[in-house]
Length: 293
Image 1 (spheres, rainbow, N blue to C red):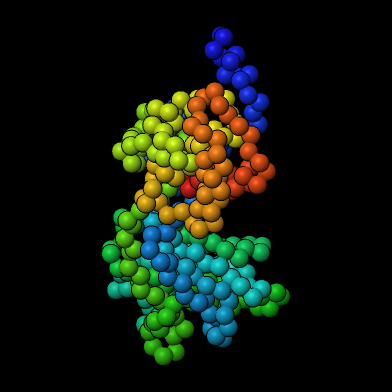
Image 2: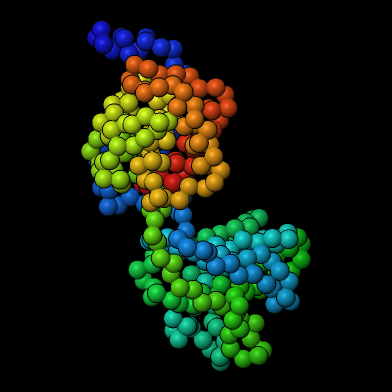
């Protein structure tokens, strides 16, 4: 009891926790089933212009993949909105065709949208696809109160000269990096192995063991604790995960503040300046959005 009182009263702390989605609160988690909350594409996505049959630009279709799924995203521009979507992904030889024209009503993916939807994403398991395949994306779009129009995305014309259909070829991008991070509850539980093989991490010029990080995780919440665990998580993953430049800048600002605090323990916790709190918040937001579940 005396030790607990010392921990709670040793320093005045700003109460701020590391955000962990409710779905991650379970103590028992199968690491093999973890997937990203927000997918991070491997390689460079392929973007094709979505054009109406009158050759007006209505938006774009973006095709990408991570280690598990293919993502096909329709996005309109110029006041257009999406109404009906039809999508074929696979071997072009198996495309449903009648009289040399694609039969969009028989495409395996179709969605009817209402209202003012301007973006829609299909998620398709990669396991069902070959290394390279065709993507034929068709949409019914409408601008303002004008009549609806058919639009296609792609760079390759399909069928006879009178056909309005287009498609694009896509090859799976190789994933050489992790696309998401394990939940902090697992990262600092002491039970799950760290991606760096449980090696020590250096934060702010000071070395911390996995045991140090686990101990800090179970202490009262303060800015210094939150900052240490946020930066340590990035160090644990190292080159295995790509961090955007803006996030790296905020992480650098956070770590610079930590470097002036000395070696942190469960008894030495500090409140960060407002600018550092903002940087920490940005890093926490990115890490949470790239948390596996």
